[in-house]
Length: 245
Image (tube, rainbow, N blue to C red; front, side):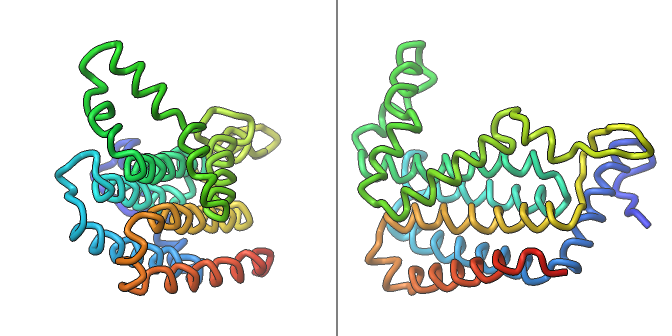
């Protein structure tokens, strides 16, 4: 039975279906949900460290971008656990981009004023588009090859599966019902659900890897790198068992 969230209208029914799927995911995929929760807790640890070192109220500070990346992570958890796979990848991309921008401005603080002034004119928009091209940011990140390889792969997949309206982003919700080809908003097929949940975990941990390059000593003192490695190890084990029922 679906929850009656707001009323009997179509939107309320759809939101109720999403909430029903989320609750079912919590029950059916407990190990993955637990790792999503562990990743959330590690985000909170990072936020605690960053809040002592940079001000979230400074909109070009690492803390501000960490907060935005975390907000995207929370949104992606709601989407992935509800079965909105393509939409999840849209938010995965935003989660990554916030992490990349945070790292970029940490390495190049002189660009903060350019980024803040983006909306002032056509010229300032062009400056930001030029200075903050993702390819340029990833090029800088190459000096950290382990993180670069991981995040580059994540970013490309986020575009393939939803960040852009590519074939995979449409095909994930395409199925045959009673002899007809239809596109569903929600997809609860077990294999696809597991893949999306695992990707959600991987994106969260990958973004934390990028933020881990900022304030490394303070994060080390808080035990964050060790915890991050442990979560990656758990992720790898879950990925190996993806075909298990």
